[in-house]
Image (cartoon, rainbow over all chains, first blue to last red; front, side, top):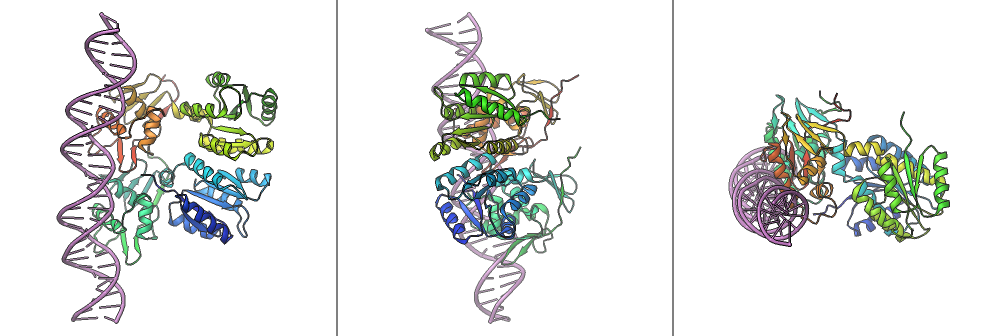
Length: 244
Length: 244
DNA sequence: GCTTTTTGTAACAACAAGTGACAGGGGATC
DNA sequence: GATCCCCTGTCACTTGTTGTTACAAAAAGC
């Protein structure tokens, strides 16, 4: 029943990346890696990341800059890896908005304890995503309300969606205009406790299309990308203001 | 202008207490002290404490026990002070629910950075208190009065709720728009000592829905998130001012 | 135009949630 | 301190949701 949190390791040293990745995998975490800021952004856009382990010292955009930028657009927790004994680095790291830091070389058990503590404090990626989601998302006259888990058609009529349908639609709408593989959709919409085959997504898409009135032969909303997955085509408007 | 955060120092050594108190006062924090668990409780009852700095090693009820007890009744953040170099202490501290720890002897600037970081993460005591118990909470015409533990329907008629029902509803209402797992709800509504299976929440939700007149097949107030828990959908208005 | 691969979806099976019924426990009352 | 009554957790059965299978249709390859 427990889901495995997905952790992203950002470090420019290949050995450290691989070492950490293996270590985390052995302790029941899912791990992805990135060697720089650009790769990090790519992974963040494509997966539901629960926590980032970020090396402070990196060529190009360094850890501090990345951390500060991250904070401006998301609340994904960050554990910063710092050189040993540099108090000032640690302080700056915490002030930049890192949730915790760890001095290298570190005790692996301590890393695990910190990951656990940070995740307990901050909750899962899916929880955070629904928190960060704007109050309203609109496309082609339809309205999606993440807080209420409701979908309104262009006539403002409530369209009942099941849990899985709603989560899939939310994943699509918050990533419109991008091809999403079945695997990604499974991860984003159903969480990683789901051991479903990826054809389950096809069924779900089929059911969603029906409720959206999207003709499967010639879909205008959720388009099929043969061999690739699906793409949510309409332009989405995000509204943060509340409706009075 | 915002009031300065109020920090409570709990340590059995008078010199450390006074040193920390002076140090924090010099850096624009309000500081109170306590030398043991009993004093700590007295201060907590009388003041809106934003953060507790707790020494791990104390005679009598030690820091870990205090920390665990604290966590059962409040969400006040805790920074634990530990003996130097004891990794296991640190790990246990984090697992007991401390928000951070600091090894003695510590760099005072680092303590400040951690205090700042923890406060940023957890919000002020007032925010927390208002989250826990505003004077009135309203949704869809219903009124919940935490002080009186009463629920009024849209006609202002008193709807009798049992203790468990009220606590569950309060947990929902103060966290509307967020998916809450059965485990979380059990924790929030029944307390940590509850040894109940999480299906007990289902029963409670069923009873609450009936009293709220929320149709279980198509609920508008407490919605089911299959595999995830429940979510309180309506927008909630918080009223702090007295009704004049 | 025939074959192969991929997608759409109906039908079904497996599973999670809703709830009536019941029992143990705690508090009130006498 | 015995009794009653209400609250709350558990069980068992029902109902609705979701993943899987199977097959037909469409698209791509040759």
